[in-house]
Every structure is written in structure tokens, then in C-alpha cells.
Length: 327
Length: 298
Image 1 (cartoon, helix red, strand yellow):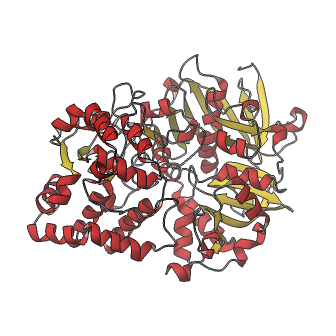
Image 2: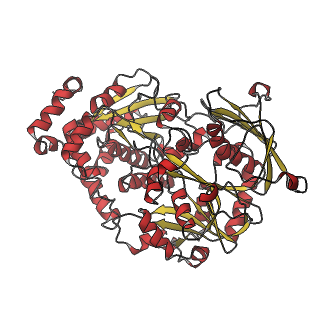
């Protein structure tokens, strides 16, 4: 339900102004503090794509993506078109009148916001970030690796959510509080003892659900990053003790490759011409923060009890290196 | 867009020899000196992961979420299966995601799905062709039963199921998207009857019984070196016995996949006739009579 007027939000240490479109997933910003806030402002507004300037074909374009320096166009067929430009504007248009605001927001808050953060020179990783004692860890993994399930399991153990899916890190190594929501599949929600029927689906008819608002304990301040983890599922029938051990990835080349692979949409980074900046940011991060594999058990109960035994703020730095074995 | 890379499909119903063909191709390219040691190692690692992962998750399978997310620019798990099948066929095939020797994409999807509106589920633009590997459905049932740890009866039902697919659940995530297959015959026909890309049909049974001419045809079709000595060396290095021994040696007990005792299990043909009941055999042969005849099984 679009409404008239501007809606103000605060996320990623930025001020967001959405014209006409309510975005309840984003934390609200008090209007009277808005003017006093020095943080830059991002505009989210509807625009007619016909009026967008022509964009020359780029080397990294796909049939759904066109990119140039500082300008990215994304088409989500049957849902919406997006233009993210100038590091401060997300323009959108729905495919037709039948598309719900919720459908629009699903893609706006994922890829469009991610593209904007990349344009702003942030290091954007595909993972989740959690906070404890004012310090952050980031757990990374491709689609289907179990990122959100892990994030929720950690929250149940007292960690607070900084960001899920899309993690933005400043050039000086601070993790920014992002969008405070977790998307959980039906089976994962049930395994956690939640009633999927009582949760809002991410989109009408889908069996993937949103946890937000009071269901989320969130961290609101940027936090220094202490450890990076790469999620790897344990084998169910493994007898190898190494299979359940956190191991450090200390080989520089391997760590660099691993981090590059875990960037949020590496194609955006290349297409937007940010690869050089991103490379430097990754190299700095790699020097500063230890990277390790996180072998999560497959079952949720097993994962919870396994996590209880880990001290994730320090485990990556203390873990034995896996490189000797791999070499 | 970046320059299109030539690519091919290795399309098959699961457990019909797809991985065996890919291992052969990697070995042939290695012997012919077409790939660097690194590229070969990457391809071998890929196959190793395929064999050790029960979810059939590999990077270069066309149903890989990682690849689709990259092409679509979104999280593909935010789309329903029906929405995805409509756009999958237009995902591109630019380089960058795959090493040279991984240009042979494994596919278990049927060529079209009920959700793809008559269009191919897989991209066809720039595709040089599809190798369609088929295997007698009775043997497929036996192999499936070992792979998925399913009773034989369930496997026979699966082959006959008009809605059958892999990774069908929409209640959990995973590294692959839903792959619609339909019945075994539907799957075979969807590939053999399509007119959009060149086709080479290979029967698993022929690869076993007459490896030299069969693998030569494969090499020719894929525009790979096909000198008889090269083929015979690659065939020897990727025989079932060799692959089994390698699996034993490399994987060992500790890394065997969940539930599945070994990937390269027997490789024999004819196990279906030995292990299926007469009734189960009759069910398959009756339901697939036309296809079995067209593909030379009866």
C-alpha cells in the first residue's frame, strides 16, 4: 500500500527518504532529528524508465542487468525495474499494477540497496553480521549455505543482529547496522519451534518468512569486525574430528580468493567499475581480520549445541591453520 | 555483454552416466594438453564435490543457484519455482564463472517445464549442442536407489511420476533450484524432440559395451581431439574400475557422502532386470514402451 509523502529511515549509517513507498523493514528515523543528522541522504522514488538516460552496453551486463560507472539497471521480470545511480538514488517502477509493495521491497532491499552500497565504496559481503560486547563477526556463504539459519541460531544465544544477507563494511573495518530482518525458510522456522503460519511470507504464496521488528534483537551501532567466517556444512556421517573444527584460512592467496568469492554480487562490483577500490578494501580487511571456516552441523539442535561451545569473537584468530593440511 | 563462450550441455536423467562423461572430457582435455594443470585440477575438484555431495550441488550444473543469482542479479530464492522457470532460459553464459574445461554443463532438468511456457528452461543462445545420455530405466531405478538410499519401489514410482523433479521442496533453501523432469520418458523426449540445439544421443549401455566408438562420437561432437590412441587412453583412465579405485583412494571412508556408500558403485548394466520385481519391470516397460523402442532398447 503506497502512501503519499516522504518516509524517513535510518540504516547503514545513512538517512533514507522514500517517496510514497512505505518500507517497514527499515528502522524509522525521527523526523525532527532528521535535519540535525549530518549523514548523507539516499532517495528512493518511483521513476519512468523511459526517461532514464541510455546506458552503453557494458562488459559485465547480462540480459537482466545493465551497468556502467555509477549506474546500474536491474530488471526483475514481472515485478519491477530499478535504477541505482550516483550513489544516492534508487529509482523503481513496478512491472504493472498487480505487483504488491511487498514484492517490490523484496528486491529493492536486496539487490538495489546492495548496488547502492557498492557505489558508495563500501565493501559489501554476502553473509550476515552479528554483534556481541560491541564487536562483530561476519559469516559468509552462497545462497543455500544456511546463512540465515545460522544468524537466527546465534541470536538465540545472545548475539544481536547487525545485518543479514547484505553486510556493508566501511573502509576502516566497521560493520554497519543494516536491514534488521532475517528470511527463514519454512523448515528452518519449524525446526526453531516457530509457527510459519504466524509469520509474514517474504512474498505472497512463498514458504520463506520474514522475521523482523520485535522478533529481532538488533545492534544499532557500527561495530569493529573481529572475525570472518566461511560457512561450510558438516557431513552428517563424518568421523573425522577435523570436519567439525574451525580452521583458519591463513594462506594469503586463498583467503583473498575466498573473500572475493563471498562478495555480494561480484558482477555488480565489476560492472560498476568498483573492482579496484574493492580489491584494496578486501586486502586491507584481510590484513586486519582473521578468516576461518565455520563447519556448522546440519541439524538445528546440533548446530545450537555446537555453537554454544564456540567463542566466535576469538575462535578465528585462535584456530589452527587448515593450509598445511590443504597444501 | 562479454563475448559468448562456446558451451555444451550434458543432459541426462540422474544416474545415467552424466558424471562419467564429464570425467572423460576432463581427462581427454588433459591428455590432449588443452588445459593447464590448474584448470584440470579445478574440474576434478568439481567432480569430486559432485560425487561427495548428496544434494548434487556443483558450480557448473545449470540449476546452480550461485550461477543464477549472478546472472539474474537477485537472490533467486526470492522467486517461486514457476517464476524462475520463466527466466532461467535467458540467463547468459558469459565466461568468468567457469574454468575452460568446465564449459560442459551438466543438466538434469527436462528441456521444458510446465512453468516455462513452452520455452526451454535452460539457455540455448550460443549453445553448440547437447549430449543426451540415456540409460535403461530399470537400471536407473537401481542406481537411484543406492544414491538416494530409497527403496526400489519408490525409485520406480519416481521414474513414473509426471511431476517428478529434483530439489522440489519450496520449504527449504539449497544450492540448486528445482529441476523439473516429469517421467523418465518425458525427460528423454523433451531433449530428443527439441529442435533448437544440435543433439547427440548416447546410450550408457553403449558407452560401457563399445567405449571406443561411443566416446569418439562424444569427442567429435564436442569438437575435441579424437585420435584413436587419445580416446583409448582417456577411456582407460576413466574406466569404472579406475574411477572406483580413485574414489576409494581419494575419498576414503571418512569423506563418503551422507547416506550413499559410493558414487561409482557398480557401473554395470542389467542390474534392473536382476533386482526389480517382474511387476516393477513390467510397469516401466509398459509405461515407457514407445520411448524404449525409439531408443533401441527393445
